[in-house]
Image (cartoon, rainbow, N blue to C red; front, side, top):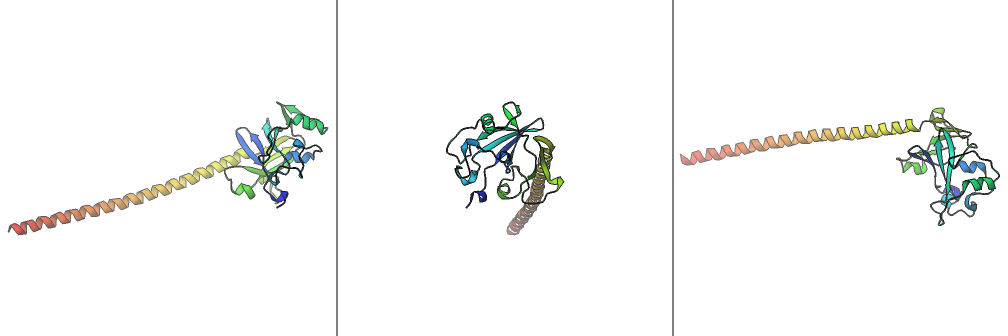
Length: 214
């Protein structure tokens, strides 16, 4: 199996209290001469991380920043790349904020990923650049233009997902209520039948006793 055919470790995007999984790799758009940790496709720690690193991104004040570059989970080595030294080594000027680098080279539309690994982790939000399909404007979840966020519907997506979950729970609760009513009705009928049989049996015994006395 080739590296491109193997599921790749995702980058992470932090927005407030939310963590989004990115399957389009923003740092690769720079086509760096000197790559993080000196890794290349040939020396990558595994085919599950051919780029040789995992980037952590953060949106703050409607701008996208590179916060960290870490080694892949599949890398036996541990450590963190110095992002400022990396950019300096590649001759790139940077705009910084709180020890982060503004991703002003990034202009991308991100869409919700519903295939591959996303099918198995439906509680997580995976975004990608929609490379495999023509998309509509309404499908855009997140739009970045030169590092600035110009469209973000992640909160709307979360609200819709929560409403769907709530509706699912309500549906299950209604079904359970209906089952409980049916069960109670059945029990009531059984108890009524038992009471009727008991009364009939007592009546027969009482009648037999009077006949014996006679």
